[in-house]
Length: 321
Image (cartoon, rainbow, N blue to C red):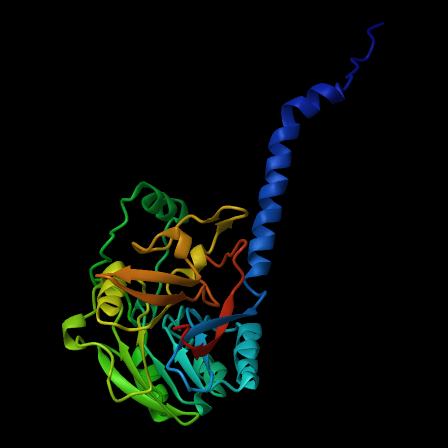
């Protein structure tokens, strides 16, 4: 009589064959889950910058950037509204407010409490154009290999537009200064602040010749504002003598390697300065540069890793010398 076939499991062989792939899959799943969760782990960065003339009292500047609002992001909206409790002297919005053509009402609702303070803004490419789906691996490879356009991209063709003019009209109605290739002024805490801004270099809308000439001599402080920190803009501002440049765009690298840092900046700025305060030098002059890591992400790549979403409260103090 034939005996039934028996199957003996070799657990050691099974672990050897499938253990490593399963472990990698589990780690990958955990990393994706963490990176999705981190996009909602909002934080406030605090920075001190010694740029004021002697005798001036400190000024507190709230910088918000790269909100990339998508309809339904309630936690982000509540967090942005809560920032009004900081009572800044003024607010600088460095662009890319939108990542959804339907997100304008929620963006304005989130920023409404901040628009009670003096402020100014520039726009980024994602304010003008709706996001498009791209392979993130290809995007990363372009930056690592240097094939990404160092001078920015040509304005998009055939891409749906975001209703950026609704943002502009609301910001202007609140008294915020539009710094699109122009200069502006605001008064706060007894100080006269001169501001010079550029439209987004990432899509080659910057026109420095229209704002060249350096800081205003009759203001207590002059600041430079731009969305994407391309070197041509930073060099021009620095060479003209601006003490502080505020920018966004980089998302701090968005996916950072622990103990290494950012892999990309999405422009020609080096990855060491992907976020935070640093120095920039051009033509024998030196300026402080603050790059915000921003508080959002493109709706098609809603991930952050070792790079929490943020806003920054900059305390401006007297110069060291």
